[in-house]
Image (cartoon, rainbow, N blue to C red):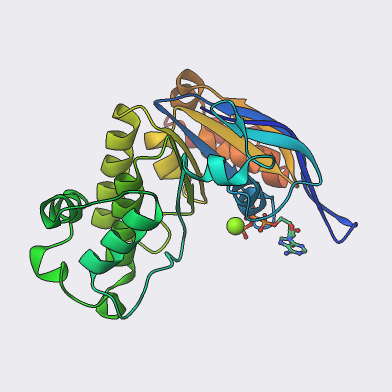
Length: 249
Ligand SMILES: Nc1ncnc2c1ncn2[C@@H]1O[C@H](COP(=O)(O)OP(=O)(O)OP(=O)(O)O)[C@@H](O)[C@H]1O
Ligand SMILES: [Mg+2]
């Protein structure tokens, strides 16, 4: 379980990036946050990971307060970023092994490493290739493998599907579904309304640091998500006679 309580960030005593955010991601749930550039998505994720300190409020993973017990909290959090930080001169297997150990795993067999690399859809020939030769999609897959290996309770993803091809994006959603089925609490940001609609159990629309709207799975399926997003983010309203003009005689 992941939770924020009045979580707030003010940068340089002047920029209110996240304003008293209250949300909850249950185990086995995928929460997707949508919002324009600068809405505060990455700031929220950075506070959940304790990369930056909240100005006020707090966040929890399970019953651990993240800003108060960062080292303990870190054990339960896995992060997949837009630009996965990997050791370029290490192979995929070496990166995975390195990060597994960093995440507290003592002994990891090559079988387990290879099984995980296979599970995220990396071809076998890539296991022993240096990561600097990888495409973006391959790096993203390796990032997910690292998160799987850590077996953390909560997985945070900042725009994980940006720059993936359609097949890569679809594969990625399937991996997220698997993590969900394992009971992980998943929190991700995206600009991709189409994928959000497909995968999210809950959607939050963030506007200038404020959570303007939350949707349940039922609402996500019923509502015109794009129109709703534009309504909150840009104040667009549908044209009054739009439906009439496209109705055939
Ligand atoms: N290190 C920083 N110092 C000062 N202001 C910052 C810093 N990081 C972010 N901001 C500001 O905080 C606000 C929220 O930024 P944030 O990066 O969280 O948005 P975002 O929703 O992730 O946007 P994007 O979709 O472009 O990734 C913006 O106004 C941004 O300019
Ligand atoms: Mg961002």
